[in-house]
Structures are given as structure tokens and as C-alpha cells.
Length: 247
Image (cartoon, rainbow, N blue to C red; front, side, top):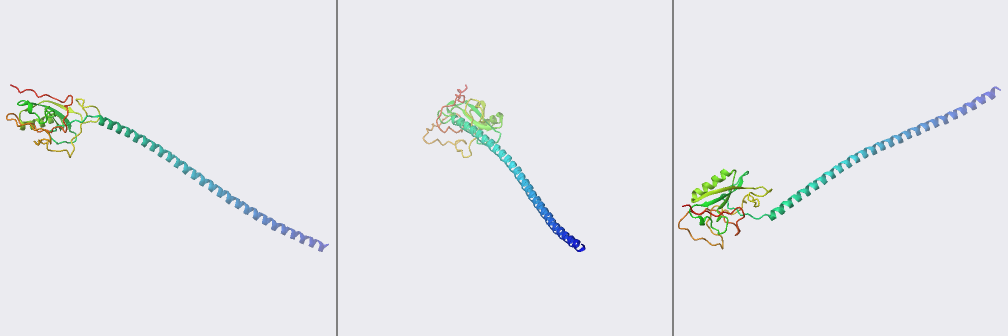
């Protein structure tokens, strides 16, 4: 009996040992599976976080692109508006009638205004200008000055050296591109830097092909002003017939 119990205890011990080994192996495998599952979950969470971050970046980029598109459309509308304004101004300038100027002086400074002086010849009214039918014959000269008084003084000093002329009236002429001038004519611009200086400074060389008037034995020296580039009628509101000599 004693030997039988000993063999039974040994068999139970062997069975328990084998069962314990299988149990330990199963626990280790379960723990391995749990760790592997945790790693997979962590990787999935990381991928989800990365995808969420990429999505936020994509949304920010989308907002930036939408803002850039709106700014681009606004810039295109502004360009179209300015283009229309330039085309309208060009159309107005094409319809404007060229206006010849008899400049007393080429001096011009920022802030100066264009003035027009109507002259009268108190000695020999028929010889105010050289070109028949031109602005000089009408007794009109132009110039730039800060104020009307400065322009009147400029013309007066010029007439003092010529003699025989007086100023009948001085009118300002608008230099702006909006609105008509005082007399309804088109606005004018300052003289170009490359504009010929001969006639403007009093050159007595006649234009090629133009008739030269014979010298006048008596009377004042004609005022040195530039005749118009082409023979034109005097614009309305600018012409002036010199008065007869006073007795």
C-alpha cells in the first residue's frame, strides 16, 4: 500500500508539473499577445494623430489658398477698373482738340499754373504777331507762374523791353485732367523738355515756306512769341482783336 501511494503522488506531481508548464507557457503567450496588441493600438493611435495633424495642415493650406484666390480676384478687379479708367481717359484725350501755346518763358516749376494774357498794341495794332491768323496775331500769350500777379509781372517785364503793348486781361487755364478749362477748351500740359526754343525765345527766323512780313518803319517791335505749329483758327473764347491806337 505504501508503495502504491508513493507512485500515485509521483504521478500527480508529474501531472501538476506538466500542467504548470503549460499554464506558464499560456500566460507568457497571452502576455505577448497583449503587448503586441498594445503596440498595434499605439501605432494606430499615432497614425490617427498624424492623419489628424495632416488634416489640420491641409485645412490651413486650403484657407490660405482661398484667401490668396480672393486677393487675386480683388487684384484682377482693381486692374480691370484701372484699365477702364485709363481707356476712358485715353478716349477723352483722343477727342481733345490740340491747343497751341505762345509761351512767354519756358520756366516752369512744380505748383505753377498756366495763365493766358490778352495783349493790346497801343501803337501799331496790325503787327502784334508774325503769322497771319495765328495766336500771336490775336495778341494772346501764355506762361506758367504761381499766381496771376506773378504772371502779370512776368508779362509786364517782358513788355517793358518791347514797348507798345499793354495787358488787357489775364485768365487762368486749368492744367487738370478733370473738367474743362476756363474757356471750355481742352486742358494743356507743361512744355516738353525737347521743345524747340528758337521761336519761344524770340527767334526772328520765319518758318519754312511761310511768308515773311515786310519790316515796319514805325511802331513797336513785335512781341517774340512762338507761332502755332499749323495754321488754325483761334479757339473760341481765346481770340482777341487788337484795339485801335489811342489818339
